[in-house]
Image 1 (tube, rainbow, N blue to C red):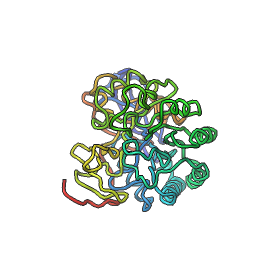
Image 2 (spheres, rainbow, N blue to C red):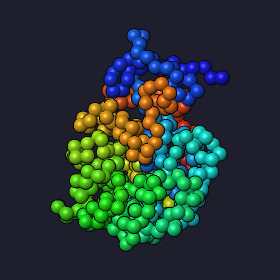
Image 3 (cartoon, rainbow, N blue to C red):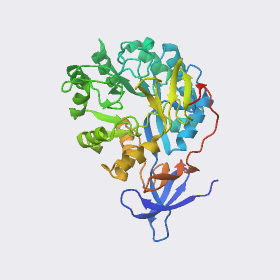
Image 4 (spheres, helix red, strand yellow):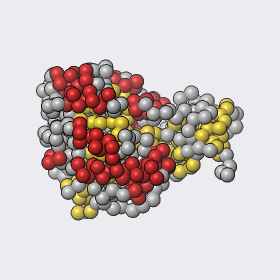
Length: 394
């Protein structure tokens, strides 16, 4: 039987010095302390959009359970105790394989099921236009198809909880209504829809804007456009990527002030190239480039192709912006995603899951991560780069 773990740190929001006892994967006791403390403590992160990392992607037709283990391990090293494995636009067969492999991983390994309680389908029901489509393959973009989706949901064992789509397609509004009936959260993203269509999608049940401000045209009408419409809609939550690359500081500030932290959640949108060194890589039959600092682009364009960094980097970048407190930034990456998806919260109280981060506050830096009471070092992972081919030096 594993011995209890004793932690002393300050509560991330109240600054109260605490002593926590972790036992059997949960917080067994918690109390104030006058003993010396080591930094700060908060719930670990939950990210709604992890596409992969280290050359592995959930949407690849070669996905294996070992690939999933590697992705989960690397995410833990960045404070991410749980996440939605995200499958982007691909063929029916590739997506069916991805969801089937994820389901098998969850059914056979409780540790993986704990890390991935639900899945995210981003596409293929998105805009085919350049800009809104981003790096999603044009040939696989198509209108919503409920029969197709239900076959994927069956392969996933009913675990698809979040779907990102564009409501511009014919039949999209009925499709949204059908997903909502099935307890799926519908998000608007990668869209070229008119403002009117955005409002109709909200009325049909859409609840979230996926990485608002990205997956859009380089130029838009200055007044009537889908960004303003989503910003102005109080019914919509918004996810956003504050990694220092996806959004400029002024737009980040507008998102925070309009949506407020109560209707925002943070995602890193880690791509299959996250964690790899700078260079050009071949993935999904497409050449992509990782730049210094983790920016991932389609070479020769301004189009981003996901992120090369993880949630902890986004929390630090957002906190340094200065428009929200570090406590708020932490909750945007932990409390808010779980709230949107209806998942159990991790709280600093007796009985809660011992999914925690210890950190240095100024600047934000992870010191240790606990998942089910088990300690991990920041940046720790196992497994080597695979699934991509480096095609030229950076």
